[in-house]
Amino acid sequence: MVNEEVLALVNQGLMLPLMEEFYTIQGEGYHKGTAAYFIRVGGCDVGCHWCDVKESWNAETHPPTAIESIVEKATKNSDTIVVTGGEPLTWDMGPLTEALKSKNVKTHIETSGAYELTGKWDWICLSPKKNKLPLVKIFDEAHELKVIVYNKHDLAFAEEQATKVSKDCILYLQPEWSVREKVIPLIVEYVMKNPKWKVSLQTHKYLNIP
Image (cartoon, rainbow, N blue to C red; front, side, top):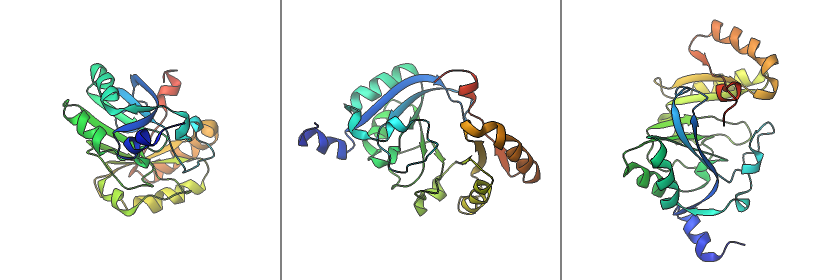
């Protein structure tokens, strides 16, 4: 049971429910192939049925951890830090990114955009979900739009989301892993007909790394 003092620190973003942290190779999107340190924060109510980290959803199952401890470990390993979840914007990311920036590292976030954008980011990967759509503000801030494709209807959703981002935002379609053999041909054909889009693959899964 988390006491009120700890809960207050979590709500201020001075502690975060830390699910896991690890140094690996970024597997998806624009920075694929780049060594990066991942901070996975617990807590998400977006509820994607195909989510491959459903254990991240319940924040209460992950220990509230002081951001100083998180930052110390992260910055020992890499100068590129990726904050993911869960849905990291469930929490105030301001204190964490301020602490990371004081160490002169690059801050990246992977988010559905369903909550207010907080924190200072060098790279924002927006991955919108139908269940809980992004708030308007983040569309202008996103550096890449990554839409997960589970079926052909997601292509129409992707186009709808693409109308909201800036002209400089890079557009990705990524097959949902469990149905990749079915949807990869759809995505390949679609991108060849609509070359403003690029294909993103979960290359870390092919490499068998986190």
